[in-house]
Image 1 (cartoon, rainbow, N blue to C red):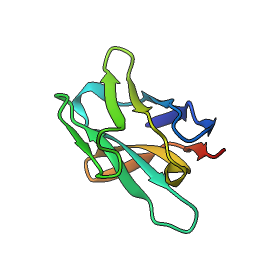
Image 2: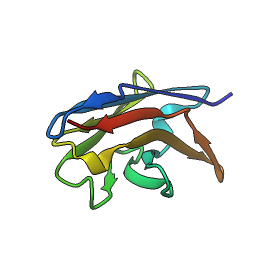
Image 3: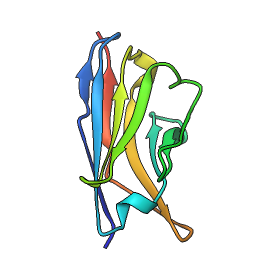
Length: 115
């Protein structure tokens, strides 16, 4: 059974940093492309960053230069380091893996950027 568990969200002031984690179980983690998505109130879920099994990364324009996605295959964990956070980064952040055409999601972790 695929399970993805996000953690690390919270309330942070503009300009601050957070590090999100996604712990995966039930999958052969190292062979899959993993992604971070986010969904703000009233908006569609959008891709933030993605990391392939080999380490290649893709970032949304909004994340470039501020966010860094990484993975530790030994720990079956993916990370998202978020720096220089802005109020518009406020959203629920979700971990995702696509396996044989099926997308699996975690429960999400809330990130709120506010003074």
